[in-house]
Image (cartoon, rainbow, N blue to C red; front, side):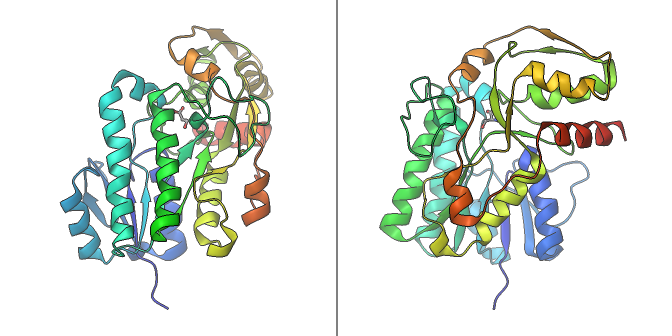
Length: 311
Ligand code: SER
């Protein structure tokens, strides 16, 4: 059997950095090509500069490395997208079309594309939000993710494209920094707890959101991609979750390690985004179809986050 050759687009972002390391460990250094709009100063391993909107360059890289599998992670997240809606739409949608079209043409075999809890909106039931429910997102990011989900399913049904997707909740890890999301506070809070023993949250007290520790997110992503095609019954995107908490609860978890940690509040425009999203997610389908099960709860995540940031 020919080994998959993987291209990660947006490999230097929050998910990309961790996914690249795990995929290289799992499949071998030479099986994974990283790409991003800019190289890092100390970029490691196979790397190609790529703007996902440059279709010719994308095809050139696919040909050069005989790529069979693409993880498309390049996108503007919720907060950044609100500041630049036209560009967010262009990047999030046309980036996806370039990859889906290559799969439709048979040039690549398999696509991973992340969706988000942002596909839900203020009219969605907010507690234990089910896989199938009202979806009226009111952020540009959410609108682009919902449209993307519809196109993934469409390309699968019409053209047989093997595209797989997860609706990520807020992702929290210590190896890479988040960029431009509404859930980023839950990463910043750990760094500030170690550095200054205090944090000013841009989301208000009581703002409960679904979240996941990064190791769980990477494991979910790879299990979905490795699952037998017949077990993947949803080709839009799967609900998955790890835990749900609000700023007070994450602060309480931090205080088990840093008793004098203090939390203040200075909500900004991101509060309205958070208020439009679910508080918790029902991921029954992911559990039943391809065996999803999270390993980290809030306290387990807090312990690893604080230990690693300290080190
Ligand atoms: N973490 C993302 C954001 O806040 C949600 O997909 O934008």
